Length: 441
Image (cartoon, rainbow, N blue to C red; front, side):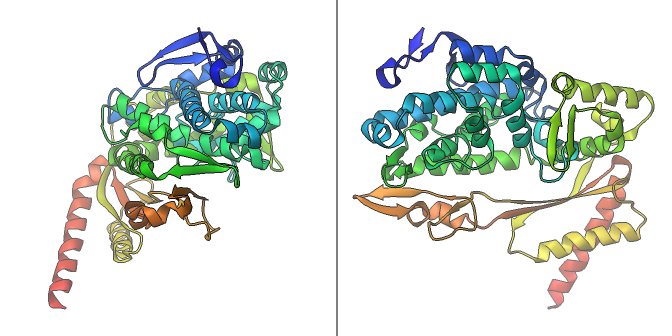
């Protein structure tokens, strides 16, 4: 048994789970009841990285251990912050024990509303403007097994729901930043966990130094970053960028995402996700949602495979794998590459290639970070660094992060196997023409 009594009163964590990232993850009796619920157990059947296992064979991890991991990561960040700012937090935040409980419940449940294959299918199963955070909010506000546990712990479900998405009073700003922001417990966990499961090093950073990187401002009720720890927060954002390029945006993995989306779009009418959105309001059949997982979708894929569906053949690791014949990663300001992308697509059309049958377009803009200066209100968030008793914007003290503010754009054109050779010749000819034009200038 472990107690947090030295800092936060009698919060007993009696149950432990073995974990490759933290060694052990500890839960209270009521947190374990949430984990044992049907909807939380469903997360065992939602792959964290969709079909990344077709690229990195060991990437079989699910949202279940990640959710436990975010609880532990959030706990570690909060406790480090509390140890360093005990008096300030108690004075400004009030009931820090209850805040700690709310943070742990929110961290545990932050992904409870994920669709099958996680982010890969969310925009197909949910209406435009609706996300898995909206589904998570609805579950927290309406699922009776959770409501009884919240009531027992004197927790308002509205607070948990708004930590996912919504407006919060100022004392909850710090919990929101711990759970979902530039330096949050979510990415702190998935970078280490997914890298471990994939067998790559791209998402690694110094976790122990990272969680001790923050102080607390009584004035703003917000995080500040310790000047001596700037490199540790830089390393997390750089790790996230490299991880994004080599795992979720890996060229082969994205090809499978495209096929998966096309398959679901084609057979969406046959899929019952247990969610209905009418007049902007979300309604759920919790019993059906419990069965709505990766396995549910794969049973449909198997059935359509037997019927000869070409997308199903690809998803079953059969025929017609997609190939990224055109693949560029450039700065957003480099407009000439957008023209080359468009030219290649136009030439494919002229040669009789059919979109979403012979070729598939992919374009994604990726921000390495969303940090801003305090004077800029247009984007995500700002962070203050305290140096020699004075406040500075993080971007003014980090030359690396300041230089990486420009987004990266990925341009890709995927081609089916039987058309790959012809498409490669078309692209080669296009490149040679461009070379001649430049040579004549």
